Amino acid sequence: MDTIQSDNYPIFFENSIDELANFVKQGRYSRFFILTDENTAQHCLPLVKSKIEDQDNFDIIEINAGEESKDIDFCIGIWKMLIDFGADRKSLLINLGGGVISDLGGFAASTFKRGIDFVHVPTTLLSQVDASVGGKTGIDIDSIKNIIGTFTQPKAVFIELGFLDTLPAKQILSGLAEMLKHGLIQDANYWNQLKNSDLSKPSAELVHRSVAIKNKITVEDPHEKGIRKALNFGHTIGHAVETYSLINDKDHLSHGEAIAIGMICESYLAHKKTGLPAEELKEITDTLNNLYPRYTIHESSFDTLFEYMKKDKKNQSGNINCTLLTNIGQCNIDNICTEAELCESLLYYIN
Ligand code: NAD
Ligand code: ZN
Image 1 (cartoon, rainbow, N blue to C red):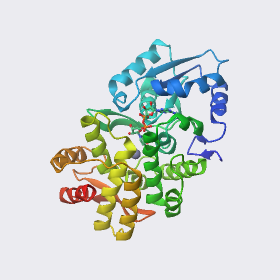
Image 2: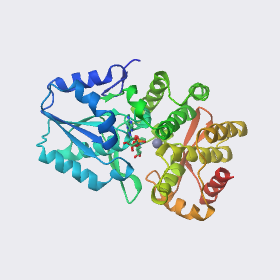
Image 3: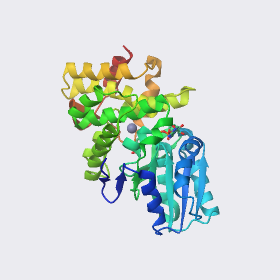
Image 4: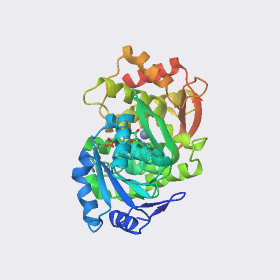
């Protein structure tokens, strides 16, 4: 698989951990730090360490796994450890983990001493096809997702597909939602290819194609002034459902599971508002319902969901905004949706 050249940084797909080792051995950095969570420390760190064992200028920072770590307290913890370990401006942070690690680590690095370099080694499917590419970093406040953050590009991304071998099926499904989204917003052939593939373990080719779509869009519009908003398809309703589940469910929905629900609801809105044909709405709904477990949403929780949607940072002038499909493979950004329309779309999902 070819290396993808992003704006100013490479995204490696072959021998990626060797490439990472070469990168840190070039002598550009005074010290480096590997940010892991408890799971990536167990499953992914040994391979990385084995490639850099001749280096003595690195330390490990390990945090708890899960979205709950993506907040300011954990960020302060990272800043303090960097200070304690003597990090200077020529230090490098290596984010070894899923989207929580890349968002949090990217944010901590982009603000520490007004910004130190960082690279991503994404270890979940979701972070490989989505979170590690495009330069968004962020943390949550009071469960409001990604409300604080920066646009800062990594210096490189190292995608090692072997890391997916230890990833639970729920997390594979989570990443798959973003891959399906890439097809739905931009590439009908890719959507069809995904639908006809064994998705329990997506192939290198499918991962590469998804990264290429995400990269192309984010290079064109790094600060989300226009076309990058296409990537928000499914995320207006999906983020609200994700927040709701994070607060209310012990075994909460993954990001992608919530986005899959959002994509069904927003496809319904697209059918009503931007001309998505009925048979394509059915195709999307059936495909996603077959792949993802049903999630119970009671009508009594709609008000809470709207409250979350109103706080969404994508809103403009107080209006709730959605990216909607016009056809499978094409979309239209900046569609204002009323509460009544959003309510109808949630009812469509429920029924
Ligand atoms: P995550 O980082 O919490 O990882 C999911 C779980 O898998 C965690 O328990 C983690 O410890 C575990 N894990 C990671 N790698 C593993 C491996 N190789 N083997 C076994 N277990 C492993 O979550 P995620 O789904 O990767 O990312 C979700 C986050 O990404 C959300 O916070 C979301 O907002 C963010 N995100 C950011 C962007 C962006 O553009 N910056 C895009 C999409 C999502
Ligand atoms: Zn997403």
